[in-house]
Length: 249
Length: 313
Image 1 (spheres, chains in turn yellow, green):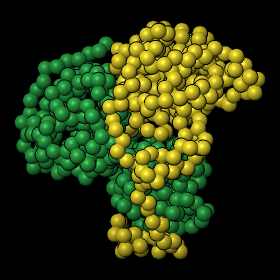
Image 2 (cartoon, helix red, strand yellow):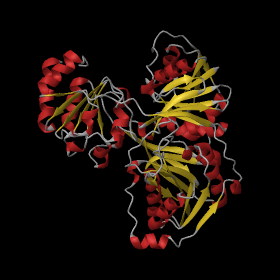
Image 3 (tube, helix red, strand yellow):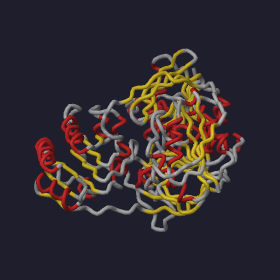
């Protein structure tokens, strides 16, 4: 079966985020960018499904400026077979991303679509669910285990208070949580091979989708910082402070 | 304006987060209806009807909603909600699961995880793991919103007397079914709403050592949490994780034990009223946000902490 994986280019998770002085956003000039960590887990899961003989082809798609092709190449180096780049310099919000992915799903007809549960920049946690709703598919969000079984997929989900397993008809959408797998590193020979793998570029207009942001960001500020308190000498002083000063016990 | 709040519950009791979401709805202003969808939820509907500020409680009581499958809930909420100006629910794992489906079915954007209401169409939400705070204006006619419960003080659970109305809307998308669940059994309070949280990090060294924290937690009526490092190392299950990718907590007292204080973790707990850090590394970033820091070996300090607490509690 064919698996479609969506990946997003975001600020590297190790980079300290700085708000621009004019409060219009976060400073991304000369900042290291990388594949969203949850998307790496999505790629890894697809590659594992292929290694198990469950997946036959892995198509990886990314939406954004030209530079997104770096992240597509990374996914190809990790084991994806083919890339699709939907090129736009506009801000693409979750609903529009889901509409673009829906158009790709209609063209490619994958049995399974795997996405990260959220991107670490906008922290929305929406696109996978929206894509599932728009395409009329079932969804297994926050997955910690994915087992394809004939025409169904069983997804174990990380939910408040524990785990929950659902069975979904295929095709279906899965979004990844942290513990689904531990992504591998790309080897140098595979990075070289990835440069020769096919990568199609297209525009949102080619897919018949108009980018019309529904949310406007009015300002972006740094969070109020918390002041460091005091160091206590020992446990007895700590308990005394908690009881008599902070009055929380 | 009319606001529909989707109640969070587990078919046996109404979650406190629902009261926080009603508080967010009050901040927007307008008539507030609460939708209770689930199976055998009569008592939950009655509890919701008592909440302060609720106008009407709508009940969709059917087996198809019993496990909160997003495919079924999404269709239900999109249909019931289309007559409202705002649809709100808690940003727990259930709300995060079904709400974007509602937004997509209504062809509107969703505003996730709001912590403040500026006006009926403008909301404040953290981005970049809380390293930046965005003020966002929603331009669609229906605002679909998930609310971070810790951003709003809950409305009173008692005192209201809303009318309860049964809905006869059964939506079975036929796409998914419930297979099973594994709920952590614990007599301790729920992590997300506990008044005291004691969390362990990589410094705990293994899962067995979390028993030390559990003993202290039982003494204080606290919930036990963990950093992502402790979860990744396999010490404890992921549902205990506090941080950007786990639970967001804001208790009266947060005790961080053997946690270095990665940004990822701070994003989940820095709104706590009082923060205590116990760590042997005095350079650990957790001390920069702690009200009370104790530089000590946790394997000595935690048992002492338990003994000292026994004297005063």
